[in-house]
Amino acid sequence: MSLLTQTTLTLATMLPPPLCSQVDAVTVCDTPDAYVFSLPDSEVRIDKLEFKTQAIALAHQEGQGHLLEEGRIAVWLVVPEINPNAAALRLVTQLDSGDLVIPVALTLPFEPGPIGYIPSTKKQSYPHTYGYQVGKVLTKLIPGIIPGSLPGLSHPRRTSALWWEWDAPSFEEENIIKSLLNTVETQGMIDTATTNDLYEWTGTRQLIFQFPLNEEGLSFETEHHTRKNSG
Image: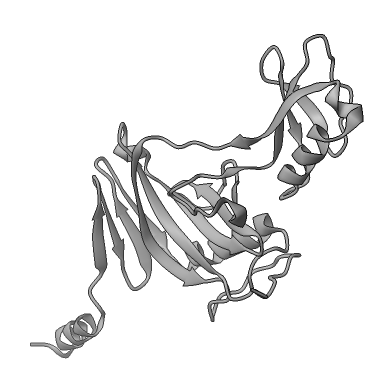
């Protein structure tokens, strides 16, 4: 046996074996340097360091200063029953008032879909609930009313004959709704107001990875900061 062959074998035996799990029709492996997703028709390999770096940066960006300092990111794999090849991820992390749910595809760079928020008052967590969309409020107007402006809301968009979607300050959606429904000036305009609740395809959801927000060796740029858990 040559020295090169012996060295190669020695290094190979030193590497830990990949940790793999089966989630419906998808196999997930945690290797020393990558996360590997084996779908029915393809295989996706994502560099582990880049994955964590982008996930943490995205959590800070979407958490807008509300992340817990000692928080973690829980990575959930979602495998739709109707199409396992459309498997995707949910990055779930704790805020000072609830959980943030960030949907991303199995590709880098991460480009999130509608961000979900699950207030702690709901007494549930993902995947038992999917939360509601951050920064959006739905209103059903009284027939004949044309929306001009509503306190705390902006940029109305009609979604049906009487329903409108509005932009709202992130994580203030429920407070604004309560104010709208209890203010005399808006009671003659609004039949009801609600959060834009999120839904997901029927399928399998499994927690596959977890890592801390402040993991050593990772760096990223963000204008936001984490908050300590005072509870």
